[in-house]
Image (cartoon, rainbow, N blue to C red; front, top):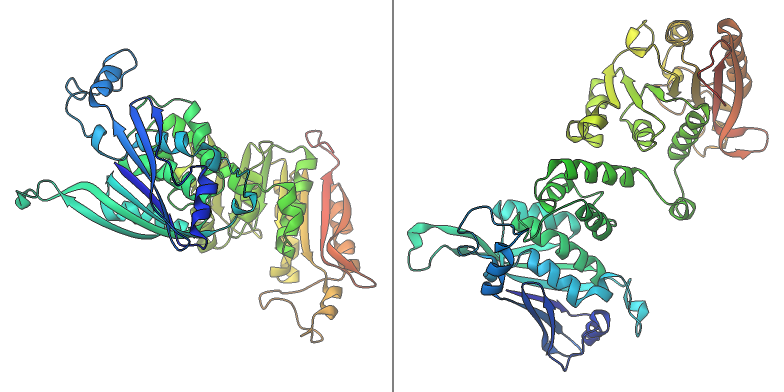
Length: 466
């Protein structure tokens, strides 16, 4: 079994610095099932190739699997199998053993190379792929790889026997060496759909560590997770839950570095206010495509989250983005989406400790606000209600501003700060709530901020604490 990595970045010989292997030496490292030979078939300024030749000891493999803890699934598997002759999880073990420093993102002599994307070509022979070409493309193409392959027949002497599941695979991409190695480490055994060792809880840590930079957003992450964890559904559910949380989170440093859109800032501000209420159950009324629901789902404080919208299409998009049908059972119980209107009483939205209406009220004709007010504040009556709406005064700063023109064609009205506060205080007084107001986004002199928020807290309940 041979794995070759090639670059044409000049000087191509820099690859040896990244992989910490001298081009003039043939080196060897030991793994449990045999030896890994590391050598350079070609080294020049224009092109450099490093190869891993995996030499599995079939007799040692039988002895290893026949004792306690062996992975045989039938009596003769230790004698009749393809493990000594294919690229499998043994190759992943070889990658870690041979290139551990590179996988950890370290390069003492040329540290600037670690984060430099470079043209890389990979050839893997022979790789078992359960699912064939479709699975190969499904796994590698979303990561930017151009995929080529040659499928081998079961027996060249008997072509009528058909094709085998064994491929010589060629991949090309412009990426960092560290990323390439992490992709291969995880996806080689995923292609094989098997592992040579017992899979336990510690494998979740390996998966999340090696896949942290790319797996949360991979469209085939469920397939990858299930196969990598050898179809142990309890482990896969745990891993998927952690991956989904990772996808919804971003580090403080990333948040500071990127410029968030106003809508993102608005959603984050609403999430933070809901966290401050201490509520454990939340209804997002007018949830749209579920962006706020996704933020709330990442917070363990919220034990039950309801998303309601009048648009069936928006709800379908929200479910698809969150992949609610693939969540672990205990997570499916946390999230629910329903179709409904806020101008009619609906018992399904009653009993929640908090509710949010993010840029919702301006889509109703003003005379219908009275119906929404009763539905939310009289009947549903959550302990806390967070409402945001555009600030009409800020419109004057837009380059294409026209007097009386609203920001969106579906807006029925847009209020000034005074109009919003007048309405908010009237609602609070009528329904026994206190209310406070906050600006959302950067503020400009005289016109205020782009958007505005009202925070209603009921006076006659004790389960919401600020």
